[in-house]
Image (cartoon, rainbow, N blue to C red):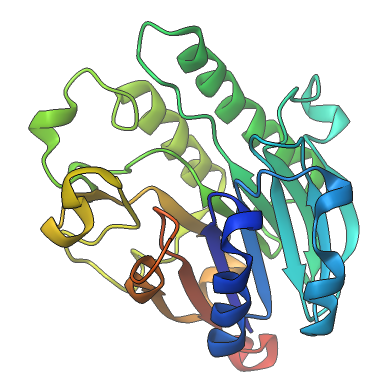
Length: 264
């Protein structure tokens, strides 16, 4: 089973590239963020023609999250689970069961600046994500949370930490809340296979940052132990960041062996 996440930064603009990438990579489950579409504009029929069921939580020109699956979609939870607290006014999370794995596609708030109200929103959002996981899943079950976390977990996930002092994406409070998700039972599946530095998933469009290697690793695939035990391979697909009109993010892909193989 191949799972992947990709902040496409406007599905309307990137749809041909997304279709091409799906045809090449053939993920069984794909989570997307920043679709920037209303639900009635989401191209479900296009994805159906490629063999995928899909669910989408959108709000028009901002945010928007989706899950595509060719291994089934059931038990859909749009927005945060009611038991976790108030619904998010933004379209930033959607959850569904796909092929026996509970999958959440998340677009964590950016935070903007440490003295900005949006930063406090980001912190409260991350805290509610953990409560959401308690409401819909269990650390002992097969659970995956993947998407654009807008957090670089460690300094080695930032091209130059000196340039991000007192900035969002690297603050102690954000990283602590991410660590609490790990404490809940989630593992960084990319790091499980790649203990290397200078590997990023996002590059600013400005100043040739992609070609200069100035990036951040902020797109994550987190899985419970039951999923981590199945993970055999992972990659950040830099090729998807190349060419004409790319997203500023690259997809993250993880391969899982069948349950029976993992448990044998």
